[in-house]
Length: 202
Length: 154
Image (cartoon, rainbow over all chains, first blue to last red; front, side, top):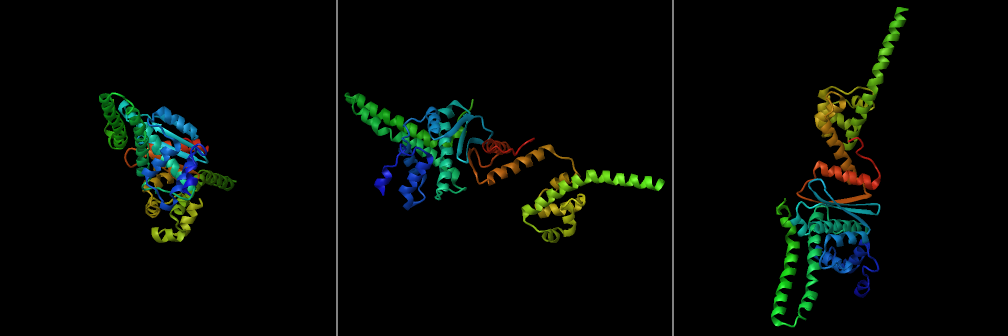
Protein backbone atom coordinates (compact mmCIF):
# COMPACT_ATOMS: atom_id res chain seq x y z
CA UNK A 1 0.00 0.00 0.00
CA UNK A 2 2.80 2.46 0.92
CA UNK A 3 4.56 1.84 -2.43
CA UNK A 4 1.35 2.79 -4.25
CA UNK A 5 0.89 5.94 -2.17
CA UNK A 6 4.47 7.14 -2.74
CA UNK A 7 3.76 7.42 -6.45
CA UNK A 8 0.98 9.95 -5.88
CA UNK A 9 2.63 13.33 -6.22
CA UNK A 10 1.57 16.87 -6.97
CA UNK A 11 2.60 16.28 -10.57
CA UNK A 12 -0.18 13.78 -11.09
CA UNK A 13 -2.87 15.52 -8.97
CA UNK A 14 -1.75 19.09 -8.18
CA UNK A 15 -5.00 19.93 -6.42
CA UNK A 16 -6.16 20.26 -2.86
CA UNK A 17 -8.50 17.30 -3.38
CA UNK A 18 -5.61 15.23 -4.74
CA UNK A 19 -3.58 16.06 -1.66
CA UNK A 20 -6.45 15.16 0.69
CA UNK A 21 -6.93 11.81 -1.06
CA UNK A 22 -3.22 11.08 -0.73
CA UNK A 23 -3.22 11.91 2.99
CA UNK A 24 -6.34 9.85 3.55
CA UNK A 25 -4.88 6.84 1.75
CA UNK A 26 -1.58 7.04 3.62
CA UNK A 27 -2.88 7.70 7.14
CA UNK A 28 -6.33 6.08 7.17
CA UNK A 29 -5.25 3.59 9.83
CA UNK A 30 -4.34 6.39 12.28
CA UNK A 31 -7.09 8.92 11.66
CA UNK A 32 -7.27 11.83 12.28
CA UNK A 33 -3.67 12.93 11.79
CA UNK A 34 -2.31 15.88 13.75
CA UNK A 35 -1.53 19.21 12.05
CA UNK A 36 2.22 18.66 12.25
CA UNK A 37 1.85 15.57 10.08
CA UNK A 38 -0.55 17.21 7.62
CA UNK A 39 1.86 20.14 7.27
CA UNK A 40 4.78 17.77 6.66
CA UNK A 41 2.83 15.95 3.95
CA UNK A 42 1.70 19.25 2.46
CA UNK A 43 5.25 20.62 2.16
CA UNK A 44 6.42 17.39 0.51
CA UNK A 45 3.39 16.99 -1.78
CA UNK A 46 3.46 20.52 -3.15
CA UNK A 47 7.25 20.95 -2.89
CA UNK A 48 6.89 24.14 -0.88
CA UNK A 49 10.14 26.13 -1.16
CA UNK A 50 12.31 27.17 1.78
CA UNK A 51 11.50 30.86 1.54
CA UNK A 52 7.79 31.41 1.09
CA UNK A 53 7.12 35.00 0.11
CA UNK A 54 3.81 36.52 -0.93
CA UNK A 55 4.75 36.35 -4.61
CA UNK A 56 5.09 32.56 -4.25
CA UNK A 57 1.75 32.43 -2.41
CA UNK A 58 0.01 34.30 -5.26
CA UNK A 59 1.41 31.87 -7.86
CA UNK A 60 0.66 28.88 -5.65
CA UNK A 61 -2.97 29.95 -5.18
CA UNK A 62 -3.32 30.42 -8.94
CA UNK A 63 -1.97 26.88 -9.53
CA UNK A 64 -4.61 25.55 -7.15
CA UNK A 65 -7.37 27.50 -8.86
CA UNK A 66 -7.98 29.72 -5.84
CA UNK A 67 -8.72 33.41 -6.34
CA UNK A 68 -6.46 35.22 -3.90
CA UNK A 69 -6.55 38.91 -3.07
CA UNK A 70 -5.05 41.20 -0.45
CA UNK A 71 -7.30 43.96 0.82
CA UNK A 72 -8.35 45.89 3.89
CA UNK A 73 -10.79 43.61 5.67
CA UNK A 74 -13.24 44.80 8.34
CA UNK A 75 -12.02 44.28 11.88
CA UNK A 76 -11.50 41.75 13.39
CA UNK A 77 -10.97 39.74 10.17
CA UNK A 78 -7.41 38.83 9.27
CA UNK A 79 -8.41 36.51 6.49
CA UNK A 80 -11.47 34.95 4.89
CA UNK A 81 -11.99 31.97 2.62
CA UNK A 82 -14.96 30.39 0.97
CA UNK A 83 -15.93 27.61 -1.36
CA UNK A 84 -19.17 27.67 -3.35
CA UNK A 85 -19.96 25.02 -5.92
CA UNK A 86 -16.27 24.43 -6.61
CA UNK A 87 -15.25 28.08 -6.75
CA UNK A 88 -12.67 28.92 -4.10
CA UNK A 89 -11.54 32.29 -2.88
CA UNK A 90 -9.16 33.55 -0.20
CA UNK A 91 -8.81 37.13 0.99
CA UNK A 92 -5.93 38.26 3.15
CA UNK A 93 -5.92 41.45 5.19
CA UNK A 94 -3.30 44.11 4.38
CA UNK A 95 -0.88 43.99 7.34
CA UNK A 96 -1.01 46.87 9.78
CA UNK A 97 2.76 47.35 9.82
CA UNK A 98 5.86 46.57 7.80
CA UNK A 99 7.08 44.44 10.71
CA UNK A 100 4.01 42.26 10.39
CA UNK A 101 4.82 41.89 6.69
CA UNK A 102 8.41 40.92 7.55
CA UNK A 103 7.20 38.24 9.94
CA UNK A 104 5.10 36.79 7.11
CA UNK A 105 1.66 37.48 8.50
CA UNK A 106 0.10 37.39 5.01
CA UNK A 107 1.69 34.04 4.19
CA UNK A 108 0.63 32.68 7.59
CA UNK A 109 -2.94 33.85 7.03
CA UNK A 110 -2.98 32.31 3.56
CA UNK A 111 -1.98 28.90 4.89
CA UNK A 112 -4.50 29.24 7.72
CA UNK A 113 -7.29 29.82 5.20
CA UNK A 114 -5.93 27.06 2.97
CA UNK A 115 -6.14 24.59 5.85
CA UNK A 116 -9.83 25.40 6.18
CA UNK A 117 -10.22 24.79 2.46
CA UNK A 118 -8.55 21.40 2.93
CA UNK A 119 -11.07 20.61 5.63
CA UNK A 120 -13.96 21.12 3.17
CA UNK A 121 -12.33 18.45 0.97
CA UNK A 122 -11.74 16.05 3.85
CA UNK A 123 -15.40 16.49 4.76
CA UNK A 124 -16.49 15.83 1.16
CA UNK A 125 -14.38 12.66 1.20
CA UNK A 126 -16.22 11.55 4.32
CA UNK A 127 -13.21 11.91 6.62
CA UNK A 128 -13.32 15.24 8.41
CA UNK A 129 -10.42 16.02 10.73
CA UNK A 130 -11.40 19.20 12.57
CA UNK A 131 -14.53 20.07 14.49
CA UNK A 132 -16.04 23.58 14.45
CA UNK A 133 -14.61 24.02 17.95
CA UNK A 134 -10.99 23.26 17.05
CA UNK A 135 -10.83 24.34 13.39
CA UNK A 136 -9.37 27.74 14.20
CA UNK A 137 -6.63 26.27 16.42
CA UNK A 138 -5.78 23.55 13.89
CA UNK A 139 -5.60 26.02 11.03
CA UNK A 140 -3.16 28.18 13.06
CA UNK A 141 -0.98 25.14 13.82
CA UNK A 142 -1.00 24.06 10.19
CA UNK A 143 0.04 27.51 8.96
CA UNK A 144 2.87 27.64 11.51
CA UNK A 145 4.13 24.14 10.77
CA UNK A 146 4.03 24.50 6.96
CA UNK A 147 6.27 27.56 7.02
CA UNK A 148 8.61 26.24 9.71
CA UNK A 149 8.86 22.84 8.03
CA UNK A 150 9.69 24.40 4.65
CA UNK A 151 12.48 26.41 6.28
CA UNK A 152 13.86 23.46 8.21
CA UNK A 153 13.98 21.21 5.17
CA UNK A 154 16.15 23.85 3.53
CA UNK A 155 18.65 23.62 6.37
CA UNK A 156 20.30 20.35 5.30
CA UNK A 157 21.04 21.46 1.71
CA UNK A 158 22.29 24.82 3.06
CA UNK A 159 24.68 23.08 5.46
CA UNK A 160 25.84 20.80 2.65
CA UNK A 161 26.78 23.84 0.59
CA UNK A 162 28.58 25.32 3.58
CA UNK A 163 30.60 22.11 4.04
CA UNK A 164 32.15 22.75 0.60
CA UNK A 165 33.90 25.88 1.92
CA UNK A 166 37.58 25.11 2.01
CA UNK A 167 38.69 27.43 4.78
CA UNK A 168 38.09 25.88 8.18
CA UNK A 169 37.46 29.22 9.86
CA UNK A 170 35.02 30.45 7.29
CA UNK A 171 33.33 27.06 7.08
CA UNK A 172 32.74 27.13 10.84
CA UNK A 173 31.45 30.70 10.73
CA UNK A 174 29.18 29.87 7.80
CA UNK A 175 27.79 26.82 9.64
CA UNK A 176 26.94 28.93 12.67
CA UNK A 177 25.55 31.73 10.52
CA UNK A 178 23.42 29.44 8.35
CA UNK A 179 22.10 27.54 11.34
CA UNK A 180 21.33 30.72 13.28
CA UNK A 181 19.65 32.32 10.27
CA UNK A 182 17.44 29.33 9.56
CA UNK A 183 16.63 28.89 13.23
CA UNK A 184 15.65 32.55 13.54
CA UNK A 185 13.38 32.26 10.50
CA UNK A 186 11.78 29.12 11.85
CA UNK A 187 11.33 30.67 15.28
CA UNK A 188 9.73 33.70 13.67
CA UNK A 189 7.12 31.43 12.06
CA UNK A 190 6.43 29.69 15.37
CA UNK A 191 6.06 32.78 17.54
CA UNK A 192 4.13 34.92 15.03
CA UNK A 193 0.61 33.97 16.25
CA UNK A 194 1.65 34.90 19.81
CA UNK A 195 3.19 38.27 19.01
CA UNK A 196 1.09 39.41 16.06
CA UNK A 197 -1.08 41.74 18.11
CA UNK A 198 1.94 43.22 19.91
CA UNK A 199 3.90 44.13 16.77
CA UNK A 200 4.37 47.91 16.67
CA UNK A 201 2.05 49.79 14.34
CA UNK A 202 3.03 53.00 12.53
CA UNK B 1 -81.68 59.56 -0.38
CA UNK B 2 -79.76 60.89 2.60
CA UNK B 3 -79.60 57.40 4.09
CA UNK B 4 -78.26 55.99 0.81
CA UNK B 5 -75.60 58.71 0.68
CA UNK B 6 -74.66 58.10 4.31
CA UNK B 7 -74.36 54.37 3.73
CA UNK B 8 -72.22 54.93 0.66
CA UNK B 9 -69.99 57.26 2.68
CA UNK B 10 -69.62 54.73 5.50
CA UNK B 11 -68.85 51.93 3.05
CA UNK B 12 -66.22 54.13 1.41
CA UNK B 13 -64.62 54.91 4.80
CA UNK B 14 -64.62 51.24 5.67
CA UNK B 15 -63.04 50.27 2.36
CA UNK B 16 -60.33 52.96 2.81
CA UNK B 17 -59.56 51.69 6.30
CA UNK B 18 -59.35 48.13 5.02
CA UNK B 19 -57.14 49.18 2.10
CA UNK B 20 -54.45 50.43 4.48
CA UNK B 21 -55.07 48.17 7.44
CA UNK B 22 -55.06 44.88 5.56
CA UNK B 23 -51.52 45.19 4.19
CA UNK B 24 -50.27 46.24 7.67
CA UNK B 25 -52.22 43.44 9.35
CA UNK B 26 -51.01 40.94 6.73
CA UNK B 27 -47.36 41.96 7.09
CA UNK B 28 -47.51 41.78 10.88
CA UNK B 29 -49.40 38.51 10.71
CA UNK B 30 -46.80 36.95 8.44
CA UNK B 31 -44.06 38.17 10.77
CA UNK B 32 -45.79 36.72 13.83
CA UNK B 33 -46.35 33.40 12.07
CA UNK B 34 -42.66 33.27 11.14
CA UNK B 35 -41.68 33.82 14.77
CA UNK B 36 -43.98 31.00 15.88
CA UNK B 37 -42.66 28.62 13.20
CA UNK B 38 -39.04 29.45 14.10
CA UNK B 39 -39.77 28.39 17.67
CA UNK B 40 -41.55 25.28 16.42
CA UNK B 41 -44.71 26.06 18.37
CA UNK B 42 -48.31 25.25 17.58
CA UNK B 43 -51.09 27.78 18.17
CA UNK B 44 -52.27 25.75 21.15
CA UNK B 45 -48.78 25.84 22.66
CA UNK B 46 -48.67 29.61 22.23
CA UNK B 47 -52.07 29.82 23.92
CA UNK B 48 -50.80 27.78 26.86
CA UNK B 49 -47.58 29.74 27.28
CA UNK B 50 -48.73 33.28 26.48
CA UNK B 51 -52.30 33.04 27.77
CA UNK B 52 -53.60 34.34 24.43
CA UNK B 53 -56.43 32.56 22.64
CA UNK B 54 -55.09 30.38 19.81
CA UNK B 55 -58.03 31.43 17.63
CA UNK B 56 -57.12 35.08 18.14
CA UNK B 57 -53.46 34.45 17.30
CA UNK B 58 -54.57 32.60 14.17
CA UNK B 59 -56.72 35.54 13.06
CA UNK B 60 -53.77 37.92 13.58
CA UNK B 61 -51.43 35.62 11.65
CA UNK B 62 -53.86 35.47 8.76
CA UNK B 63 -54.14 39.26 8.67
CA UNK B 64 -57.79 39.20 9.68
CA UNK B 65 -57.13 41.20 12.83
CA UNK B 66 -54.88 44.21 13.34
CA UNK B 67 -51.81 43.93 15.59
CA UNK B 68 -52.87 43.31 19.22
CA UNK B 69 -52.51 45.46 22.31
CA UNK B 70 -48.91 45.98 23.58
CA UNK B 71 -49.73 43.88 26.67
CA UNK B 72 -50.37 40.90 24.42
CA UNK B 73 -47.26 41.69 22.37
CA UNK B 74 -45.25 41.57 25.59
CA UNK B 75 -46.55 38.07 26.38
CA UNK B 76 -45.91 36.88 22.83
CA UNK B 77 -42.40 38.36 22.89
CA UNK B 78 -41.56 36.21 25.92
CA UNK B 79 -42.84 33.05 24.26
CA UNK B 80 -41.10 33.77 20.95
CA UNK B 81 -37.91 34.86 22.75
CA UNK B 82 -37.71 38.19 20.94
CA UNK B 83 -37.28 41.71 22.31
CA UNK B 84 -40.62 43.41 22.95
CA UNK B 85 -39.29 46.45 21.16
CA UNK B 86 -39.01 44.45 17.95
CA UNK B 87 -42.65 43.32 18.04
CA UNK B 88 -43.77 46.84 18.88
CA UNK B 89 -41.90 48.21 15.85
CA UNK B 90 -43.32 45.51 13.56
CA UNK B 91 -46.82 46.19 14.89
CA UNK B 92 -46.42 49.88 14.15
CA UNK B 93 -46.61 51.07 17.76
CA UNK B 94 -43.03 52.33 17.70
CA UNK B 95 -41.09 54.01 14.90
CA UNK B 96 -38.64 51.88 12.96
CA UNK B 97 -35.13 52.18 14.41
CA UNK B 98 -33.02 52.24 11.30
CA UNK B 99 -29.83 51.08 12.97
CA UNK B 100 -31.55 48.19 14.75
CA UNK B 101 -33.36 47.18 11.58
CA UNK B 102 -30.09 47.17 9.65
CA UNK B 103 -28.49 45.02 12.35
CA UNK B 104 -31.41 42.60 12.26
CA UNK B 105 -31.22 42.25 8.47
CA UNK B 106 -27.47 41.64 8.54
CA UNK B 107 -27.80 39.01 11.29
CA UNK B 108 -30.63 37.34 9.38
CA UNK B 109 -28.60 37.29 6.17
CA UNK B 110 -25.55 35.95 8.02
CA UNK B 111 -27.62 33.11 9.50
CA UNK B 112 -28.85 32.25 6.02
CA UNK B 113 -25.25 32.17 4.75
CA UNK B 114 -23.99 29.89 7.53
CA UNK B 115 -26.93 27.53 6.96
CA UNK B 116 -26.47 27.20 3.18
CA UNK B 117 -25.05 23.68 2.67
CA UNK B 118 -23.56 24.69 -0.70
CA UNK B 119 -21.44 27.40 0.91
CA UNK B 120 -18.42 26.73 3.12
CA UNK B 121 -16.49 29.58 4.61
CA UNK B 122 -13.98 30.31 7.32
CA UNK B 123 -12.05 33.18 8.77
CA UNK B 124 -8.91 34.03 10.65
CA UNK B 125 -9.87 36.60 13.25
CA UNK B 126 -8.39 38.61 16.05
CA UNK B 127 -10.29 37.66 19.17
CA UNK B 128 -13.26 35.34 19.47
CA UNK B 129 -16.26 37.13 18.04
CA UNK B 130 -17.19 38.48 14.63
CA UNK B 131 -18.24 42.11 14.44
CA UNK B 132 -21.38 43.19 12.55
CA UNK B 133 -19.15 44.66 9.84
CA UNK B 134 -17.34 41.34 9.50
CA UNK B 135 -20.65 39.47 9.19
CA UNK B 136 -21.78 41.94 6.55
CA UNK B 137 -18.53 41.32 4.65
CA UNK B 138 -19.09 37.57 4.77
CA UNK B 139 -22.64 38.01 3.47
CA UNK B 140 -21.31 40.18 0.64
CA UNK B 141 -18.78 37.46 -0.24
CA UNK B 142 -21.65 34.97 -0.34
CA UNK B 143 -23.69 37.29 -2.56
CA UNK B 144 -20.76 37.59 -4.95
CA UNK B 145 -20.20 33.82 -5.07
CA UNK B 146 -23.83 32.73 -5.28
CA UNK B 147 -25.30 35.62 -7.26
CA UNK B 148 -28.06 35.96 -4.64
CA UNK B 149 -28.91 39.31 -3.07
CA UNK B 150 -29.58 39.16 0.67
CA UNK B 151 -28.78 42.72 1.72
CA UNK B 152 -30.54 44.78 -0.91
CA UNK B 153 -31.30 48.23 0.42
CA UNK B 154 -29.32 47.67 3.62
